[in-house]
Image (tube, rainbow, N blue to C red; front, side, top):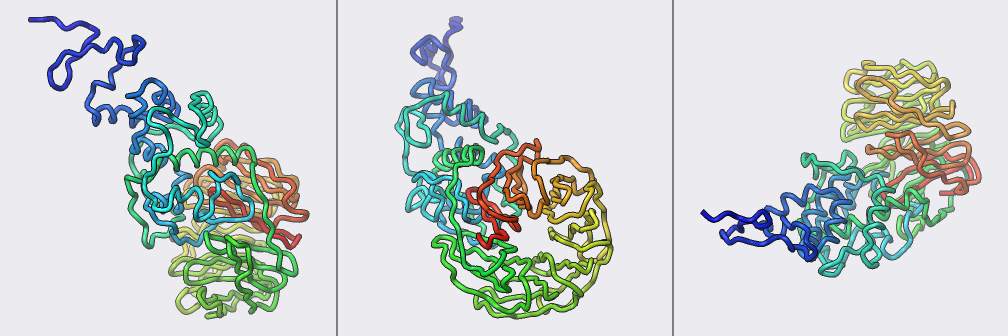
Length: 485
């Protein structure tokens, strides 16, 4: 029997191969001589720094590092990156209609270089066809700006981002809770996942550095209290008693809705309806397509401070200390929850759970179908102004100048974030690790809710109190007493 040398392996054809100089400098090359599919089973589990290093080893390893499946997995591992727009791009679709602040455009644009132009023809559409177009050379790993390969630069970008390696392959392509479930596309394997990954990594760096363009929308005649937006529209409500619909891309006002007899304090909308609440104590349900009122909900004894809705119910809360549940189809009042001892300033709805925040310094969770109180969250020392709820995590803001993060199931406070110097008036959080807050101290802050760190502090955006804020992967939209959006 002939003995094999230690520096040799047997190929799939049984031929003895010398692997001593597989990479040209005496290093052991075990990937090159494996069948490509088997080698990829190894490579696909590498994290981003490892892939960056693999790309620099030799020509054959660089080929593994460029495989689209590697970049698809790296991209989809990042939960916060799986936005409707990014997934729509991966499906070759230019638009995935979705009415939610987590996936829209706005007035603070994180990234103004051509590679980071996040309009309908920017980052989310790598090329006109949506097909996989080569963007780098055959043997080099280029940075997102097309520069020469610099592994140190790549690793530096990684270390400064929120990326963390992950191995779990389950639920990698599950829709985000904020995605529209209508027409959710199937992901194409030929999408340019490397290009998408590089753009999102660069965008992540901009969130840390604050690189941004500021655009201002003016048109309301008084303070702007509320906002929601998507890829096509920005909708705002004001003390001037009107609701305005703006074009997200041109920033032009498309429509002005009048119907309330006092300030428009809150609004929410989807593909078919716009729901607004006002100081006149009423809720109006508008037809989204025509802009005409369909229902006027009357029962509150004071101003309506917030609204939320799903396909079945509309929820409103008021200065009268109550929460009301209405049937969306005909506006019938189904039940009233009276458990707070102060004005109910904010309300959130997720599945069959309502979360409310009140001036009595308490957060309460309710069953929408029975009206029963499920749990009370106590920890703030002064009245609450805002709350967000994604199904598992609650984030709250208060006049005690604090932001608290809560476990919705246990009721435990898991994080307290300090930094604002006045009332935390507004919050936006839609899952993941990032939240954005606005305050009467005239600042907007970006937070990592896992570490409690303020990762970005925008101080010169508004000249007065910040009333509302929404953000997406690349934009922040805010409204203020200074009448500006």
